[in-house]
Image (cartoon, rainbow, N blue to C red; front, side, top):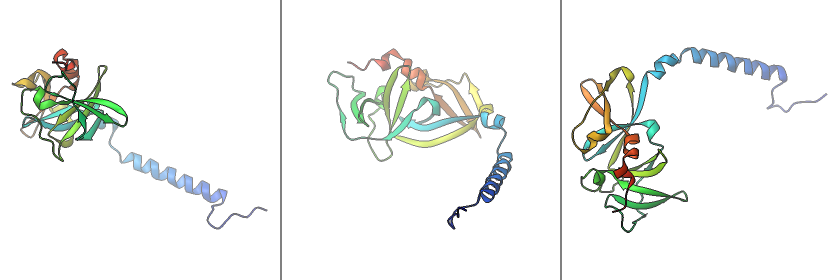
Length: 186
């Protein structure tokens, strides 16, 4: 007869343990919110551009990177095209989003971030002064047809209103589709 080491379970004990784990999983699942409640949320990334707090859909930002000092300038590019950064062996064009909108250049700091977009065949990084974090909004708080004045306004089509605060939604897709944005050569 085969003897099990002291730290191994018998087949019966292993089956009992698995049954207990399954029972615990089902109990925990009953305490989770209904799937419809989860679908009623919209997830966004809050950041600022030229002192304006805006939010972008999480599914439009594929990655967030700390600012990289080593960005190689591209001769003949528009001033808002900072250059190319080497990110894990791939070259990433980096755009100063404040300069693109006619504001002052982002002063790099520990709070500065590069938001990576992979939209409409475009892969690029947007340098922003800071990211405040992720925010969940109820879809019932959505203000459709919201508009915003200024350069950012061309990319804001909706907003969320929460406790009297308005959170403009910046469309990264609209930015990626803009022919002016896609043409970085001067």
